[in-house]
Image 1 (cartoon, rainbow, N blue to C red):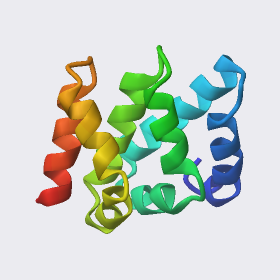
Image 2: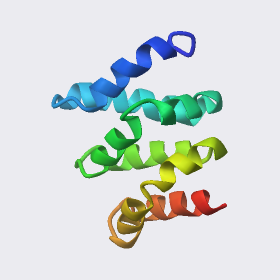
Image 3: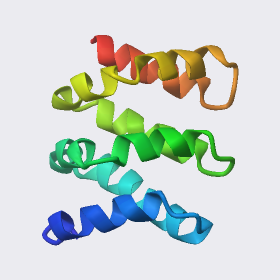
Image 4: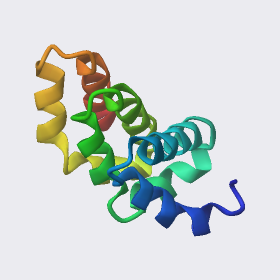
Length: 115
């Protein structure tokens, strides 16, 4: 997958925005796994048009919120992505203060962005 990743990334991003839960879930699994295990691809993922925005939209979707937040946490661990994620600082603060199941992960992302 790593070799074909540049060709697949636009399709994966499109699938994240799909109305079909199966497609969206499959794309989220790919993003989550690639961001967790392929440190070198984290910058590519974060710079893909609309990918971060799609992950933030999925945070609001029941069944996808935890995995989407964990993928964002993986992306935040790459120093080159921090400036991109700072644009979503207010949304992260909202989620960190919400008391929801993703609150701790959102707080962890905020801590990573300030490290």
